[in-house]
Image (cartoon, rainbow, N blue to C red; front, top):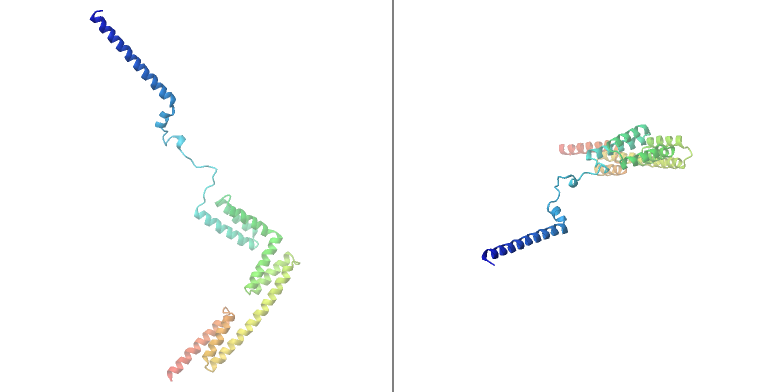
Length: 240
């Protein structure tokens, strides 16, 4: 075999080996990509701007009311209850409708509507008048108590609470009469003490009268009288 033939054989073997190496590398690369198909996807995550990543609010969730809406509904519900207590049920329902328009589906409005429906029944109206009479008696307001009891009698004259409240009103009036008499007596004592220049006794009588009922208009008048008497006494002493 000559030199040229030996070189040809050597170069041929080298070419074959190179082709085998390249083919093996391509085969291994294909196997790696097939075994890890998620690698490419993991390296290129979807953009946050794509529809799949965009989060939207749930349309089924109720809107959160604003502070102004909450306060407006509270005022309307208060108006509705006051109107119903006065027997103005049509106006009360109109206020409830306005509250529903401001905040649809409100539990507070629904509860107020049930309450006012109950108040509109004869039993509910009777209960309202009886409660009004009790409050008036507690406040020593005989006129308001008598008015509420008269309305209650129109609704159900046989209601036992009416007789009980009339008795309570009578007892309260008797106590008021005694209280007023005692205040008159003490203020008379005060004026007698002023006349004899016993201002300590006058002050004591006025203070005792005020403890009985400080809201009595006669107390204010007597306090003014006593203050003037004190001023006149001090002036007389200063001139001596």
